[in-house]
Length: 145
Image 1: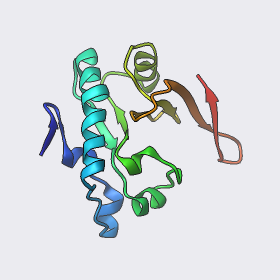
Image 2: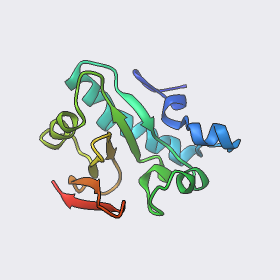
Image 3: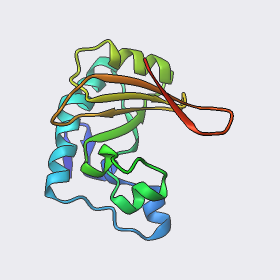
């Protein structure tokens, strides 16, 4: 099922953790609507900007999957409002800076551990940009970009 011309429900819901653990990671109708909205308002326009496919590493996660991957208990992934991604040929910092300085109506933009970019789109698009790193005790530390 295509959510938009370049993004499918399958790629926005696939989870290796869910597959490995035999967990059904199927979103409900509201979550599918939210996934469609993030694709329409963020991911499709971003694909046009970068001129290349966007590799989604995590989209929708049900609460069980979210917990298993160590996601926040208030993660927008559980509502279908967030996606983690990379783009071949772009560093994580380049992607982060590109989205941050664009006019895309994101809620949160997070450069996570210099490994991927997290973007969310929802009812309150705050345009909050953060950088997550690990400290010496391996705890996640966030700072404003």
